[in-house]
Length: 104
Image (cartoon, rainbow, N blue to C red; front, top):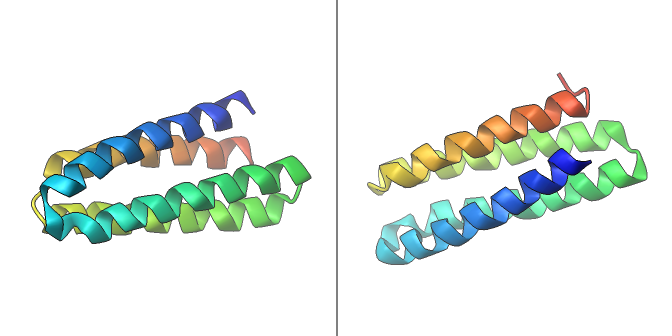
C-alpha cells in the first residue's frame, strides 16, 4: 500500500514536470494528455485495490502502461526526449505495482 501511494505521488510530480515542459513545446500536448489519463487510471487502480478487485486492478494497470508508452512516443515525436526518459521511471514503478498486485 505504501508503494502505491509513493507511486501516485511520483506520478503527480512527474505530471507537474510534464505540464511545464509541455507548455514549452505546444506539439507535446498529446503526450501531456496521455500522462494525465495514466494518472487518472492509476488512481482508479488504487481504488480497485482498496476494494480488493484484483482482476480489475491488473487490467487497469495494463491500461496505465499503455498510456505511458503512448505518452513516451508522443514526447519523443515532438522532441522532448528528456521527458520521455523520465517516463521510464514511471514504467519501472508500474512494473513494481504489478508485481505487488500479482498481475504478472
